[in-house]
Image 1: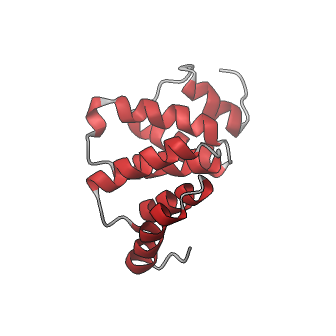
Image 2 (image 1 turned 90 degrees about the vertical axis):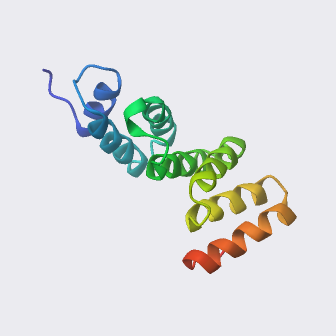
Length: 127
């Protein structure tokens, strides 16, 4: 195998050049997010969520997907992803924060307000 930089290795794994498990791909998605490669993380996270063995209850990947959409300024998909998380776990404070802030960015302050309040009450996230 060629010498890859860490980021090249992340992308090579995503392109199928490296054999990896679901867990490896989850770690790569987290690393892409941490490297601020949000759109690349989105692609990988969407693929991960389609894998049957992950299951419906994995909120971590769904929450990271919502965060990736938000940081990519894709507020419509961020809203949908945050709502997906809240459908599984209605007490997830960061999902309420992402939903509220995304709604604010779409000029919907009245719709955002209850989610921002819940984020503060459930997790201490001040809007």
